[in-house]
Length: 232
Image 1 (cartoon, rainbow, N blue to C red):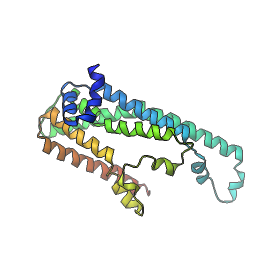
Image 2: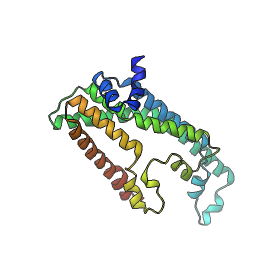
Image 3: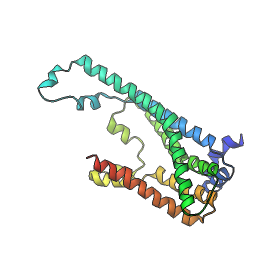
Image 4: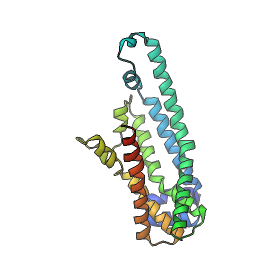
């Protein structure tokens, strides 16, 4: 029961709850909660998503457009909805555990580089606990999406506004930059800094700065560099 209550303590006592979980290497329940919330969010989105606009926008507009029948369009819409459902469930049950494992490995390498050895179980707990705000975001998203009659891509992106990238009047480049200024992501960064400090014995301030720099590198690569390289 203590292990089950522990993740909830992180939200009311971030410092004490995170430190206790990391010291006790309690990563299983936070990981299960994360996987469940993300899978639930993806499932509800897929059930409410109206794929019509997305499919129609990809249809040819030249002389070959007339060759696409209504039954073909309906089949593409149904296929897209099924893919969204499978992808949403897989994102929670497969991608999230792998992400926690990858994050723990990055923390282990970082601890080794700074000569601050730590038990991998503690780093795994730090990674899992740090992603609990992401689980909370997906839980809120699942509830909000469940009350919608249908969701378009634009409506889905703005359903739970937590990032400065949703401000009006921003250029595409500035939107990519401000996507990193996300409340739940920054919350996770703070918890990760606390967890890394607990696992390695590094001073809390230094740990927070280090994790913050790693997050800025992540934003630079995945929010700015790769989308810009892909022409988005």
